[in-house]
Length: 438
Image (cartoon, rainbow, N blue to C red; front, side, top):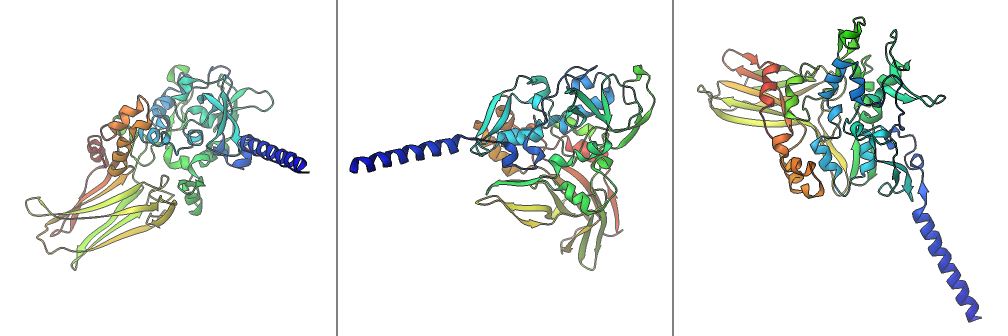
């Protein structure tokens, strides 16, 4: 009797261990863990494009020369090489394969293919070598194919998605303007919580849709320009095209990109709509005039710093104060938004102050778009041991190499004459190229 009970207990233990091991090692499809999430998987491997070859931006640039040059200076082209992103990616807490799905979104850019998740755990991806890995394409970040190339379900051949039509390119093409316009939302309108301290929050698309605006992301971030789609030697007609600089908030990924910001379409979302000093009160009015989404938007750690400096008759600073416009998050022990002072489209932020008793003859107002705080980049430098070359060395010198912020508005207000003089945006961006840190 005792012997039978012992055998039964032993069988139960073996089956329990076997069941545990099976459940712990089973491969769960990504679609089951992240149902309906486009960002959960990269675009499938793209075969070579007829008439083009590999679907790299460089190959596209053989004909689309101006568009390629613009894209090379874009935020998208620097999505993988972004020093801040590489620092975040190297953290032990980073689910790297998920982050890369937006920063290098085509499977050809990935050395491995994720076939599923071990026991549904996103920190335990099941990986196999990718026979179609293209290292040149990997370095291109958000490349042309991200939006413009897909695989035909019938022929299994790559084709280009166009938005205009009426051309005769050497490659297969299908016109689907709506698909192109909606592609932005796949990465720029997703909020998800992986665990208590891992939250990705991007709601730019939702903010845009809430305004009921007829504008799209492309309306502002890809300004229209009249030109040939391709190089002049191909003798194609002049048409309405779009710039491909994707400038965004005007804080580029490298200092050498500052001279291209305005050329490629940047203008601040906010304007200084009023600066008034009277009755012992200072009133500064900031309006979200040019953005059909909140400002700031996207990365929740971005914000505007507003500063006001009082100057005496010699131009010396004798008074200074500042405030911020943006989101405030608590990241530990649980990630959550605790405050939000951002400005919705068309709305106004009013900053009221009591005028100082000091002998101020003029006030200098500045608005700075901050992407990365000094305290954060200092921590990144100290934690650079997580990275390998060349990014380890770059993160160690992040203040020298990586723009943290951009001064986007500056105005000098004279108290006696009640007049103001605004600094041209071009002058501000020349100075931005020389600024270091926050």
